[in-house]
Length: 138
Length: 138
DNA sequence: TAAAACCTTGCCCTTAGGGCAAGGTCAAGC
DNA sequence: GCTTGACCTTGCCCTAAGGGCAAGGTTTTA
Image (cartoon, chains in turn cyan, red, purple, green):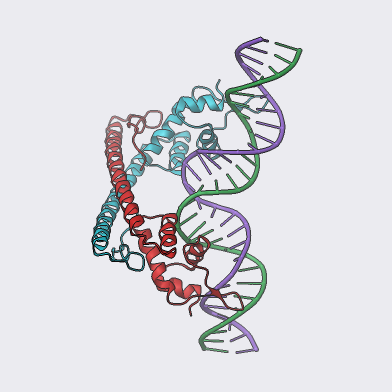
């Protein structure tokens, strides 16, 4: 039996995160002592570990909850997992492309900043950013 | 004279965003009519446009406020702007690298998912994510 | 003159927790 | 047995940048 602090440490999480996962329905509410302390068994560790891994892969808590719900309902969540992975893969590709476009824009803005500084030029707000073409957000 | 809705439309923003920028000190509080309506002059448009551009470059409202404050104090904000651009450029490079590492991890997880499906294999949560190595966040 | 379109403020919502407060509980040392 | 420190409980406010809604006032248009 472990308290929330111990189980969190075992899974590499904060106690607050563990409570949040419970509140969000990602993990089952554990037994409580008479005093109200949460008591976890070691069984909770792999589930928390899964949550951590899935988060590291960019899945949201909501998506992770969907996977876990499906699994708890006896279904095989593999299809959902692969769908989510595909979705996030495409999302990541989009974000990388956006960031690279933004990088180009930033570099152009930066180069103009240097040129303006050389000329002693100073516009409304330095004219550096006004001249930069609009791009996607980061 | 323009109402908040008109000035926002001119700058490509929502009225709420304009009010938010005022509350955050990015723009000066405009005059009010007797009824309390904000009344902007056309002078506000380039400032709002600057905010929009700077945001598109990934700057936070706080950073943009610092730039505008510096400019309003009579300083030339170019130095600050170039510093911020450099900082964000480095930040973007980090994020692109992180996302590319994440992409690799996701693809590995995805490939394992297919293999597991072929074998009819099903682990705690499909074993797809457990086997994926931890990576940086998106 | 009445309705539509606009404005005002204020509040709650979003992610994934962090931080703090007030108060209760457990384990170790003396 | 008692104290002390470490831990636990819930609850509230905070983050970034607004979106959405509500209740009520105003302006414009038909």
